[in-house]
Image (spheres, protein in one colour):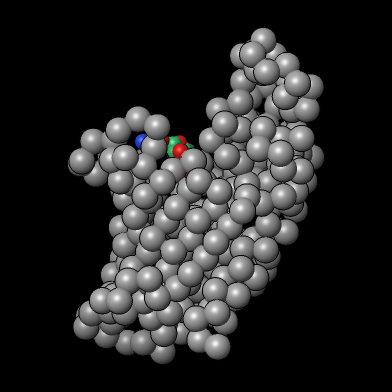
Length: 233
Ligand code: CDP
């Protein structure tokens, strides 16, 4: 069993809601385990060629260590990456002269914040009435020690067999040798719009991980659909 008792292919307890910010044109909440993202979408008149702007931020108290107030390089890069993961699903031709301003705040971080941000933003865009080819689902998959697992938490992301072997030998038995490789993914329909990899992994494990990630994304999209149904019906 994993640190938090899950099986290798299980996602964390996940909760999604839309319409959480009354003043926004679209909004959503996504909690996956102890990672929480809140997204808001505002629609503004823009140029003929419509565009999506994303701002991802992590609140100072979200992580283990207090984060400074200024925007970090990580936040700027993640804002860009998250926009790139969502853009291909938006049908911009149907909404000319529009700037979509999307902000996503991470209020609690326990790994997988960029994927929680994408799930929350996908829902917030849908809630704002933005025409989309499909919802965009996201999840992180990876290899912890020698095990391919879905939806890593922070403890798994930080895995180091040298330390765990001494401190928590029962988990060393489960995960095995090595450190963690984290692979955040996003997809709409059958198209991958985000695939990142930190660390090194062999081809066979990578393909296995992506397959598991796709199953996880399907679950995330199902949960998005349930959130929409709960709101409207
Ligand atoms: O959050 P995500 O996995 O998408 O991105 P990451 O940069 O790989 O960060 C992994 C985790 O490290 C975050 O989810 C947080 O739990 C933690 N972290 C943090 O506490 N403070 C930071 N400034 C950056 C990351």
